[in-house]
Image 1 (cartoon, rainbow, N blue to C red):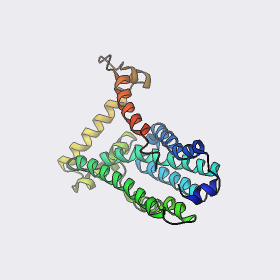
Image 2: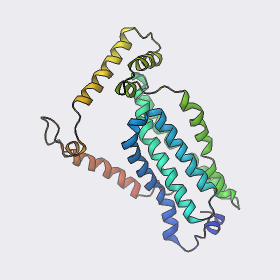
Image 3: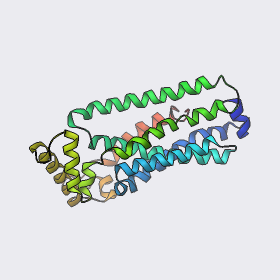
Image 4: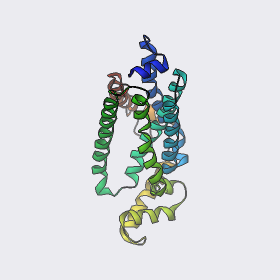
Length: 251
């Protein structure tokens, strides 16, 4: 933390509040992930990403212009909500709109870009730590608008998920997008097969949907006792231990 940051927000000799301001961002991410779980299927992949980016922009603006702890905390929570929505939806959208032969590669590329972005943010923060005054911490916060503007400029032009379109009664548009993604005609066998598989999977999910309670308890059809809670606890526990180590809250 720079001296001007501590002076402006009056955070000298208050390690607990300083830690809260830093770590509260993850609470926003959790709320964003829950928001995506509840509303994203209704909004659609593109709209969800645009909403998430807009929320991030509002949170970033509040942080950049903060002159007190309350505004900074609100800004970090709001920004976290936007990030939680985006990080929940972007991988799904990517998987549903990429060619089969590219999906594995794109997962790797996404991880590389994520790590590169985290590294870039650290280097920018380090570079500006040698500068005095408000710019030392306000510019690193403002730099995220560079990527926000890229998202605003590109997301509206990208295709919606064919799977989402099928599940929401837009089969013609889904077929057209599949054909465009594969660079084939809408009547070609490969496109028809892809659409048929998606439509069959969506129909099966609708006909065999189960409640969240049954899903977590593993009470699904004849396959009782799938230990879903244990599996979820193992996955969430690994992520919790990563977060508890402090790697994210130090950003």
